[in-house]
Image (tube, rainbow, N blue to C red; front, side):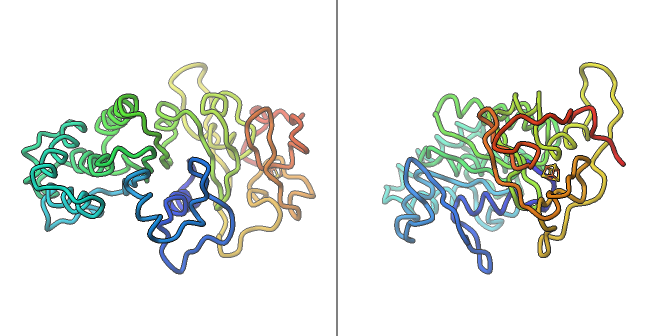
Length: 294
Ligand code: SF4
C-alpha cells in the first residue's frame, strides 16, 4: 500500500521479474519456496511464470488484446506452456471462466463486449489457467466502481480458499487493504517503511508515515475525529532526501533523521524503517496523538 508513484507496481514487477529496461534489479533477492528468482535464467523463469506465479495487470482493457476473443487469448496462454488438444483447451478455458463466474459463452466475446468487472475476471481466469501458487495483482480493482470492487475481491478470496493460492496485490485503497489482506507492507518513496499483520498495523501503526495515512481517511466507527492528512508532498525519486526519505514531512523528525538512513528493524515481529525504534526497541514517542499538520 502507498501513494501513487511510491514504487508499488515497480516492486511487484521486480518480484515477477517483468521489469523492462532501463529498469533493472540492482540488488536483493526474491525468494519463492526457498529459491532466489533473481538468479534464474530466462528458460527457468518462463517455466516459473504462469505455472507457479501469474500476474494480473492493472487495467484489463489495456492488458487484454482488443482484437482477439477472450477464448483466443486463453488458448494462446495455454499453448505457450503446454501442448494440449483443441478439446482440452476448450474444456480448461470454459472451466476457468466458470470459476470466476463468467458463462463460457463469453469465450467468443471480444474484450470490449464485456463490462469492466467481467474483463478483470477474465484476466483472473487467465491467471488461474495452471492453478499457480502465487497470483500477483497490480491494483486489481482500480478501474471498477465500489460495488464491483467488493464483489471482485470477495470472489478472489473465495477462489483463494478453494484453490489454495496466495495473492500479492498492491493498492492505494486503504479499505481494500483492511478488509482483504492478512499482511501489509506500507511503501513510501520507493522503500518499504512498515511491514506486519494488517490488523496489528491498522490498530497500532508504528511508522509516522503509516500513522499519517491512518489519519487521512475517515472511520465509520468510533468517535468523530478531525482528518489531518500528511503535510507536504512525496519527494522527487531522482533526488530523494538524504537520511530518512520521510524526514521533510515527519512531525517527529530528529537531527540524525536528516543525515542517517534508518535501517529496517524488527519490532515485536513487525518490520519498521525508522529511527524512533533504535535496535528494535519500542518508541517512547506517543505517535497517534501527536501527528498533526504543522
Ligand atoms: Fe520520522 Fe525520523 Fe522516523 Fe524518518 S526516521 S520517520 S524522520 S522519526
